Image (cartoon, rainbow, N blue to C red; front, side, top):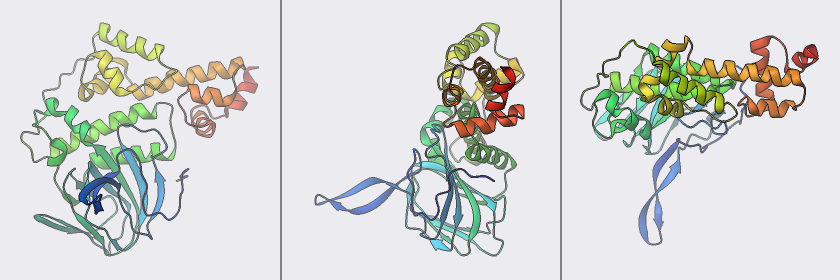
Length: 327
């Protein structure tokens, strides 16, 4: 897979959610706890990261891990650890207050870690490729009403080791694709994917009270709400559109909005916004007035290169080829 951000050997990286609370020496004569970053073994290799992609609802990293052990860490986010290329000869060992787990990191297996619970981790053999996804606690708080849950839901996710879950695996793979290659409405999809992941964890792996979602009806958005959402997308197509914004305009929760929009329009919010932005990019290319870099920015891409690749996948030609043919 053509990873754009290949950064070589690294021991740590900072991004919006991959933060841990670590014990550090006293500061100013007193004990202190300070925000820190997750420490990875010196021989582990960071293959790709969402740190510079502007993701707001989830963060992700792709790693190749060596034999190692980590210090005690207390994660602030819920972590999903997905083995993309495993090692049947090794073990992943985790221990904390009141629990000890070990499981073989076979390809496709998954580890879950709740927020706010400390643990130590040791790998007895290298794992060629793993994906770490981090969901902020605030996301789980926003879903409490939909699942009739008490507070601090992110702290109530189970410590699961070496499980198989097709839903998490499929969503993880789609997030991996977005990490490799940006799409025109990738941020909208990532927000939707983060909600789907959080809902799956609450429904299947939560120890806190009832985890049954509220009853879902099969009715799409009514025409008034739908038109408000479509008008909002049209008016803000030049700007960063989030699923949170669309749900607010539609007067629905995040959990319900994407599904109801798809029922009404026949496509997901991501695909609808992608289509609108691609149509606009075609028109701007044909007009020949704007540079490619500006057209890429208008379409929601972080670089001209990623726009060129996405445009090529959609039209089987480069933006320059499209412009030449329309002159």
